[in-house]
Structure formats: C-alpha cells, structure tokens
Amino acid sequence: MIQLHKIENIVFSRSPIFIIQVLRGVGQIMLQENAVTGLLFLVGIFYASLPMGIAALLATSCGTATAIVFKFDKENIDKGLYGFSASLVGVALLLFFKATFWVWLLLIVGSALATAIQQFFIKRRIPVFTLPFVLVTWLVLFLSKQYFPDLLAVPQSSLGSAYGSFAFAIKGFGQVIFQENIFSGLIFLVAVLINLPIAALYGLAGSAFSGILASQFSVPQESVSNGLFGFNAVLCAIVFAGSKFKDGIWALIAVLLSLAISLAMLEFSLPQLTFPFVAASCATLALKNYMSPSIQPK
Image (cartoon, rainbow, N blue to C red; front, side):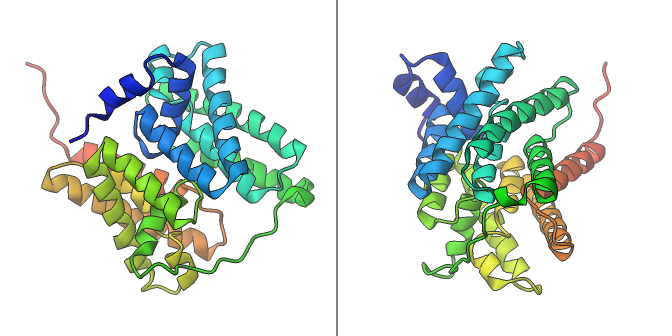
C-alpha cells in the first residue's frame, strides 16, 4: 500500500504551507486530506476545462485565505477544511454562468462566504459536509435568475457515454466536481485510490449501484450514462467506507437515501448539487449514532 502522506512530505517538503493547505482543500472535496490527491483533482479539472481549473484553484485559495485572515482554527486550515466548499463554488459558477468579470468577482465573494458558513458549523461541531457550497450556489442561482438572467450560461446538450456500459460509474466520480469527461473521472478515482483504496472502491460501488437503480425509474438515460445519478452516491459511500460489514450497510443506506432525494428533487426540477449527499449522510450518521450503544463512564 502506498503511503501517500510520506509522498506528500517528499513532494511538498519545500513548498509554502499555503500551497499545501490549498491542495488539501481541493482533496477534501472527496474527504481526502492529502495535497497529492488534491493536486490530481486539479489535474483532472484542468484536463477537462482550463477556466474551471483556474476557478477551482482561485476559489480554494480565496476560501483558505479567508480562514487565515479571520484566524480560524489553524489545525482545520492545515487539514483543508476551509477549501473544499469554496472550490466547488468556483467550479459550479463556471458551469452555470458565463465567464464574465462579474462572475469571477462573484466567485471570490462566494468562496469567502462558503468558508464563513463552514466555520459556523465547525465551531458548533455540526457535520454538514458540502452544505455551505450548496447554500451559496443555490443563493447565487436564485438571485441570478431573478435579477441577472443574462449571466447564466446556455446549457449544452450531452452525448452520453461512448466508453462501455460501466463508464457511468467512473463518470460518477467526475461529476462530483462537475466533470463529465471520463478521463477526469478516472483521474479522480485514482487520486482517491492511492490515498485510501477502500474509499475509492466504496465510491465506485456506490456510483455503480445508484446508477443501475436509477435506470429502473423514469429518468433520462442520458443523465444516468453521464454519472449524474452517481456522484452523490460516491460521496455517501466514501463517508461510510470501512473494512467491517456494518460499514457497508451504512454506506448502502446512505446511497439509497441520496438516490431517493435526487429523484424527488428531479421531480420538482430543483438543482441537486450535492444536497442529496449532505442530507442522506447527515441522516444516516444520526441514525448510526442513535443505534450505537452509549458508553457509560466508569
């Protein structure tokens, strides 16, 4: 097994701490606290889209810098916990909006706001995962549709998968960071695999299961083929990844819940983002904690 933390220390031994913090922030998008994983995520994003790659790097940097300026917990900054929601905000804005000056400015403000929201929940020890990203992006989408519709990008039609029947599972990894390209999905998968193999396997299984199950419902087959019913499952499965049988049960529950929420949001034409993952994982964690036997102090 590759000891990626040792590789991280070697690769970034002379790098400024800010660079490591930013890269870990990108890695935390899939709950991976490692700069090498974060670097590979950026490679996958840049491979698919230069503007999105720049957006991810800029947004994560802004989010991390916000945490430093306002003196948030140093340990959490080092772990990259103030970067991942900001990073997703950056990529999402380049997906939904035209790359104008105002959108880039909005990206900076949105990433800082996502970091502030993250801190609000971290201080209260409430696990919300990527909820700050979801809230900020929902807010920006709502305000833009109401007041600045010209900023919105024209949705591009997708051609679906041409790489075999199992490609949708790999694309589920790519869609976590809004990348439909299968090669970006592969890079993301490898980035998680070399850091935490069991998490990658859980994520791949979750994406495959969710996609297969979604195809049994009245959903666009194109969406299934492009991993749009897999990325929330990827994140859910990674959260509960473990070597015990019960870990697999909890992961399955979270994946099923996330798919049910995705289908419900699709029915009402609501932008899902990673909300199904957040809601399903929080609900499953609450259930897991409730069912776990309490430990009485001696």
